[in-house]
Image (cartoon, rainbow, N blue to C red; front, side):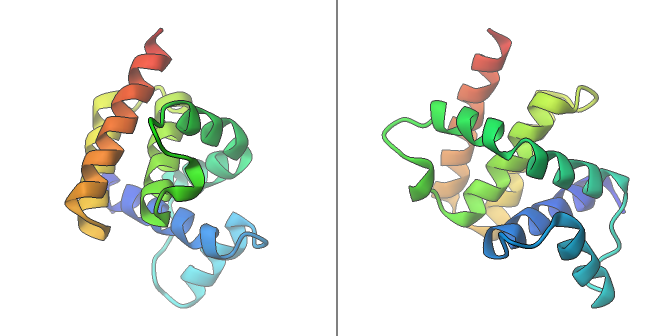
Length: 133
């Protein structure tokens, strides 16, 4: 599995978590593996666990960088992608910020609209600047 494929799979896990808030990440991954939807690797488990663990901090950073929006108004696709990318930006030093942003935009284009992709790009651009400061 390539890093891109792993990142997309992690997005799917995080997206699923939005619909199954009472289930743990392990339960969601186990469910997917049992149905042979995917086989989780270390990256998928690590990033999904980190998003789950740091969800409040990640959402606070997303919220701080929204202009004219609230986190509750964001589509579930965009929210899952933003959580994934912000997690990478904050907690995975081995992943360049530009790669996290680019991958997030590409995943959003695949699973949502061009408008959402532009929105995600703008929010992540703002996040990256605020993290640098």
